[in-house]
Structures are given as C-alpha cells and as structure tokens.
Length: 263
Image (cartoon, rainbow, N blue to C red; front, top):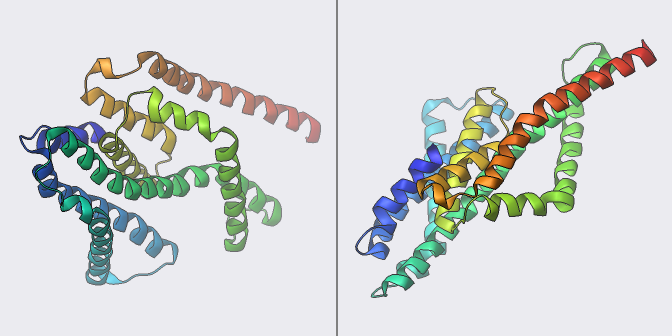
C-alpha cells in the first residue's frame, strides 16, 4: 500500500505534469528529504539503541536533522547537473527525471540492504544464538562476543547466498513481476525498507524479501492489473503458502529423529 501511494504521488505530481522536469525540480527535493529522514531514523535510532546511548529528545532530534541534511546535500550534489537542464523536449525530460530517481534509488537501495541485514540475518541467526547459549551456559541469555561471531557467520552466509543464487531472485523481483524504472523502483524500495525497519523496531519478525515483493506488486498495481505478470505473482504466493507448512513439517521430523537418536 505504501509503495502504491508513493508511486501514485510521483505520477500525479511529476510524471503527469504539463512540464515534468519543472515539476521534478519542485517535488524531488521533498522525496529526497523523505529519504533522508528515513535513512537518518534507520541508522541513528538503531545505532543509539545498539550502543545504549541516551542523548535525550533534543540532542537526538538535532542529530537526526543533521544526518538528514547531510543525505540531502549528497543527493543535491549528485543531481546538480540534472537540475541545470532546461528547455528540453518531453521525451528528454522523462529521461532526466528517471536519472534523478536513480540517485534517490542509490539511497533507498542502501536502506533496503540495511533493513535486510537488521531483520533477515537476525531472524536466521537467532535460533543458532539461542542453542549455543543454552549449550554453553544452560540458559538463553546471549553473550555479546558470541553474538558478534554468530552475526559475522550469518553475514558470510548472506554474501555466499547472493553470489550463488542471488541472480535468479534479482531477475524475478527486478523484471519478472512488473517492468521497473528508477521512479517505480524508488517507490518500492523506500516503502519496503520503511516497513521492515518499523516492524523490526517493534519486534515483529517480517521477511524483507516478501515485503519488497509486496512493494513491487503495489507499484505494478498502480499502473493497472495488466502491468503485472500474474503467472509469476501466482507462483510467488504459492511458494509462500507451501514453504511454511513444508518447513514446519521437516523441522518436526528432524526434531523427532534427533530425539530418538540422542534422547
């Protein structure tokens, strides 16, 4: 829903304007501010919580605003050549507008990677951390050094999985569900990253991959049902429905086998 509304706003205020490039110069800074504030909230609040820092509302707000301004400054520097363009035909205007959103995409991609690392890796290594803590000390209170080692192990697994099987997922999410442009991908990744970080901050375990697929689906839906590859979407939803009971059944089977072997 968030991705759907984001892309609807981009199409309404920029892509559908009489002079799209002029409209982009007016509204893209607002989207850049939105990206900056979300990135700042993601990094600042997570970092402050991780290092147990309590700066107070005023100091935290000031640091949040400073980080947002820094992100916006970097974005404006990167987009400065595009902002200097004028008197272009409509086709060229759309090309430069998508170039603007390519810059924003660099930030939202970082946000999505951050969200993935703060959520999916944590979910994957959580059971391992609990088991190792139980074996070592007899309870599930996690040791900081042990957790760091397990998280590094999880990061290695993420990188290895990306190199081995990431291409297939990239192709599916990037082009098979619906045709993505930088503006559409910006709406999808920003919505997905925001959703994952908010969910993670409240302790709700969600899948970053499933959230991103839902965001891409929302962007495609904003362009009409014909813009979606319904066969791919059907297969994705079927896999989500099947994998949960299958994984639960296999885990139950392994548990009883190990219980019989080791008592």
